[in-house]
Structures are given as structure tokens and as C-alpha cells.
Length: 166
Image (cartoon, rainbow, N blue to C red; front, top):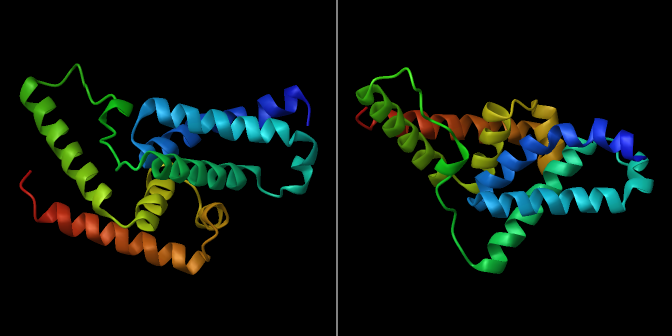
């Protein structure tokens, strides 16, 4: 794989990888480090990338593994990810902005309470828009189990959100 192929095939998924890493490590700088490490690994293995059938799935798996390694090495818990999102709607009234922020905080809190697999699968499917097959390959989970985890995650968020005041 040459420099141009790398730019056209790999670089377009950097934002997806960043958001995924951010969801795990919780710190923007740490997420950037993870993505950079994934790209360095890819570049160092560029002569062997033809053997990888789904590079995006490989990148997601590598991102997940490196993110978990970062968490384990620092012995820290997930931090809020509010810094990664711009929630400010400049056309909204102050009241609407507060309500929007409160709802977002509640949903984020519910997502952070999910088991790791459910949270990862829900993020990849509902936020990143990956197919069940792509998630299955990326996380090395059977497709039927992906569907089960996603169903349970959505149900938990829906039930948790229904019990909260909005």
C-alpha cells in the first residue's frame, strides 16, 4: 500500500475511530493518541494489508484494544465525553439549551452504565452507523449476539430514560 492508497482508504475513517476511542477512554487527547497509534501500526504493516479482508473492522478492533489498554495502564474509569460534542444550538433559547443539555447528560449517563459490549455495539450501530456484519467483524462477536446486545442496550436506555424526568 502506497501513501496515496493509505490516504484514500484509511484516513476517511479517522473521525469514526476517534469517536469510538473517545467513547472508551473519555479524554480527547487520549483518544487522539489511540487513533494515532492505530495509524502507525497500519502504516508499519502497509506491505501486509492486502491480507486483511476488512481494514475498517481491523481498525475498529485495534482502536478498541488500544483504548482498553490505555484505560488499564492508567487504572482510571471513563470520564464524561461532553467535550467531544458541540451541544450549543445558537438559535435555541436559554431554556431550550438547558433542556437539551440535561437530556443529553441523562442519555450519556445511561450509556455509560451499560455493560462494555452493549455500549460499544450501540455506539457503533446507532452513532457510527455500522452494519451488523461490520460490528460483528470489528468486535469479533457473532452477528446474532450483536443483535442481542443491541436490543438489550436499547431496551435499557429506553427504560432508564422513561424513568427520568425530562
